[in-house]
Length: 244
Image (tube, rainbow, N blue to C red; front, side):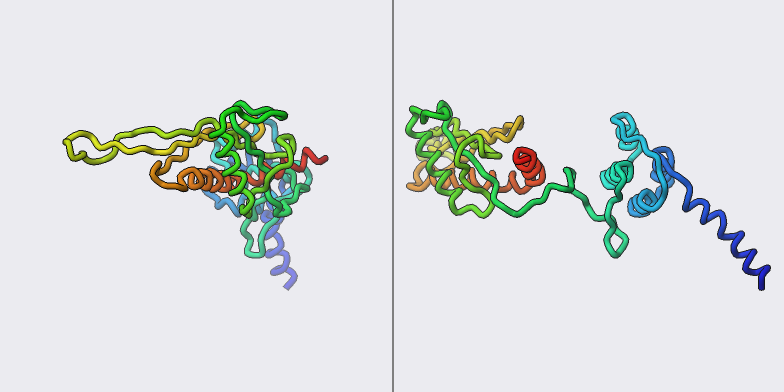
């Protein structure tokens, strides 16, 4: 009986030693190239002693070797003295790309709306732009994602109305005289600004509609809501760091 136990222990010894073996970037790259599933690699990182190179060059080398975002996050967390949490089924949970101390309370993202040419003290001389500013502000009042910031400095996102006008464009089809059919379309151009990020987008509508500009304002707010939802984590991070 003792011989059987000893034999079994000797057979398990390499596995025990392997489990306790310290792993590093090269070990992870070797596991990636061997085709091990991502979850198994993350589990090995979390449960094994490790010494990792998390410098810029080290992370680039991991990425070039095919390391996924979860694997790199697990290495960074382990190097920082923590570990990526795992779900009960063994799958890795996605951790935030920012400081885990930052919590999203679900509050609305403050937005400042202004017209091109306006300043902190004065409004734009272009009444049409100011009208669209008010249309957008009114749409924000009913938004579940956005709120009107009290000042531009308090906002996380700024919407700047750059252009509002009607343009005649070619339409599909031929008119009664055999020429190209033309229609009038409303055009509202807005610039979205968040920190160093800027992006312009255009909303078009039917100029014959009596609510064309309100519809354009609604489209601006809808697009902003989608962008905020896609970038909410980064916006919350900015807000948290401002408050510290």
